[in-house]
Length: 163
Image (cartoon, rainbow, N blue to C red; front, top):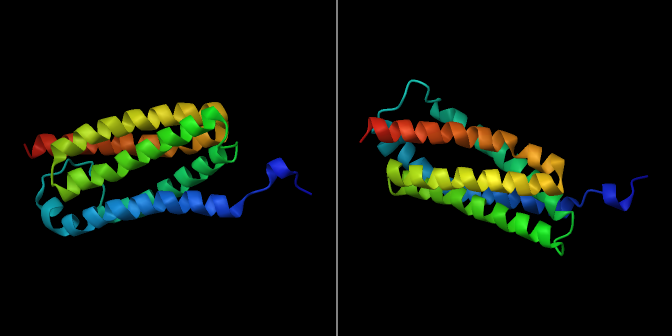
């Protein structure tokens, strides 16, 4: 029999994942229309992945982010450190969505680059905060920071090639 501390609050887990996926859906509303039009006309570096790869990667990353947020949330939102960490998580999630709006919506690799640098810093900060509360939560953000590092390099390269 599971103890209370080991029980999974399925409602909270689903809510955390859905919130992250919704951020992705908002971003994709700006991304999808630009993929076959504006983005297709840009010069891209040789290491640019195929367009079809981005969707599955982001779905996985948003799921891992949601699980990570859930693990921290379950430590008690009344705890000051948890509230601070969840606030940091919300800020990086907003920056994540903003990147799509700037890069694809406004068709601005430069604004996207500025945003993704801020996003990267916010993810590092969130990962540190989450890791101090739950090692698992911190580790679950690992693939996200790796992907955003790659995305930042790609964003920089696109900006350079098209300036």
